[in-house]
Length: 307
Picture (tube, rainbow, N blue to C red):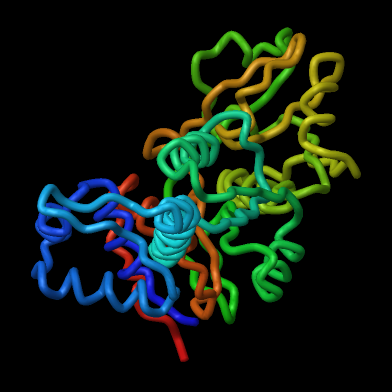
């Protein structure tokens, strides 16, 4: 025995409206077409579903039981179609974002919170690890997109710059530079630094070496096998300072202050880029890229995937 959802909808409408005529009008179909489908349904089932009279129609005992069972079937089918449609348009499903920087403040945190608010039906997850593990996750599909500090490209991945953030110096509150509203790169030429071995410590080290070497300085940089949080938490008692991105300044530590760094052209900035595989067919990724594009007024095209 087979029947389609249309026939179930017709039967439910007839029961609700108490009239084939009114039910047909509500569904915007010809009354003759409507009646033929009800008759086919009754023949298929082998039971009369409606008693007909000049006043309209009423369900029989069999019809009442049938309608009671048909309603959840139609409702479930509607939900299934809606969920599938939403998933196909990126409004449902799952999105896994990888990053190698702090989300205590800055654009990454603001972006993630705004995305989750606008897309509550998408199961969002994130993973923080080093660059190599993030790229490996993109290859396996465990990660849909990675947000990385810097603009260096990686072969086999699509990369687009998303936003820029300020570079700040974290230093002991008793340090003389703590009294400055801003710190210039030239102020840091003779200072001692400590950076974490964990990402993005190596990127910051390279940036620091590049900036200070322009003025002939050879900075004393110590790399500790620890996290950025541990480095920052211990600065207050030491004589070294650290360099972090704006996204790390959301957490305050005793006797540690943050000061923005300026160069000759103004605030020191670093770019954050999105990195993903173009053969990733996750609709939620495409929707996230559209969200990023609109939020930051970007012009990159992500509609075409490489073969």
